[in-house]
Image (tube, rainbow over all chains, first blue to last red; front, side, top):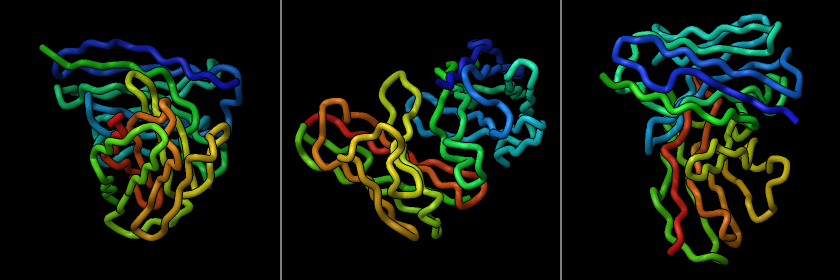
Amino acid sequence: QVHLQQWGAGLLKPSETLSLTCAVYGGSFNGYYWSWIRQPPGKGLEWIGEINYRGGTNYNPSLKSRVNISVDTSKNQFSLNLISMTAADTAVYYCARPLDSSTWYRYVFDIWGQGTMVTVSS
Amino acid sequence: EIVLTQSPGTLSLSPGERATLSCRASQSVSSTYLVWYQQKPGQAPRLLIYGASSRATGIPDRFSGSGSGTDFTLTISRLEPEDFAVYYCQQYGGSPLTFGGGTKVEVK
């Protein structure tokens, strides 16, 4: 049974950098694209970006200038860094895995981390 | 960017009633790339439907999806108490992938 466990700082000041890590347990790491998705309080979902086991990345253009997603295959982990945080970045951040490793279902998210509430406040 | 508009924003129904949720895209989306999720308070989204009409593993058959082009529908045939939640549609036919704003199904 695949399980995603995520962690990172939950309270940041404006201009600081968000760092979150997601560990994958109980399943294959290689072959998948791994995504980060966020949800502002009371609002909808926004895809941030993805990474594969080789380090190939794709980012949402709306965040591309501030985002970096990295991978550590030795630990089956991937991480999100988001620089220059503002109050508008306050959200629950999720890591997620697609339904399978095929291109066809690359963006059908069937396994999610527990979510990390990140608040940006001075 | 493809914008998904979900309606209604809130649907007030009683257990046992039928729920019909709409997701309209700003441009045509292949049904292959249309997904539905359910989210309950304090929880991550749960995959319900992919490919517009294929139920994910373990999803009861009271949930069904349909549609094509720019208009897609999620139907819950008879609401169970555990179905009261927020539902999101998502597309990945256009880049970047986007989500709708959600429909809340609440107890009347």
